Length: 286
Ligand SMILES: [Zn+2]
Ligand SMILES: [Zn+2]
Image (cartoon, rainbow, N blue to C red):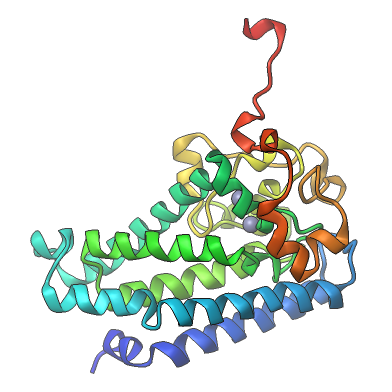
């Protein structure tokens, strides 16, 4: 049995050990070398952000008991999808699937910022007043369901190998925790890492209250899509310590950092509040 078969057979322990392992490393790292000081107490943030994570895993298991891997197994048995049609060599299809799924996640992320109703869901991720390892996992359950459906469609279309889907999910999980880490990484090292990985300093720009900054750096794992497609921004105007994290209109800790408020966030506010409507206009644009 090769290592790829071993991963496919041990999906749950592989995913759980990576999740807890990476979480522990980042959590300890940000405790000893934080980039910014927190505005809301860590206890309150962690209980509520992780409470949402727990709720989401429960909802997912209930709605989709076999999750993305189950879909990949069925596609595999039926020999469906583009990769099977062209009989792409196995290792190549694994690498291609991982990169393609990352690109789809990038496109999905741009979409949830652009389409008004979807931005309402996604703003739960952005409303966090601070930025740390737990921010990386806080998404509204409806956005989690939407992500899962998009993932299913991608797997069916590609004919993605089961093991590639597992590796992709492990990588996405690990990189999301890393790039949301409240970590102080030396500038020189950050510059090198940025060529192949989204770093905390790169993704933090995306969590700025400023619209132009929040509408940049959409990538989760690979930084290439932002650079290739013109959504890359190097640094925040206010600097990483001075910049304000969150959303301008929603800054009440009870609303944005406590579970009931977070769950209700998509359903409140004026219709005009939509992201795509926030288009600046000035004389020179006439
Ligand atoms: Zn976003
Ligand atoms: Zn984020």
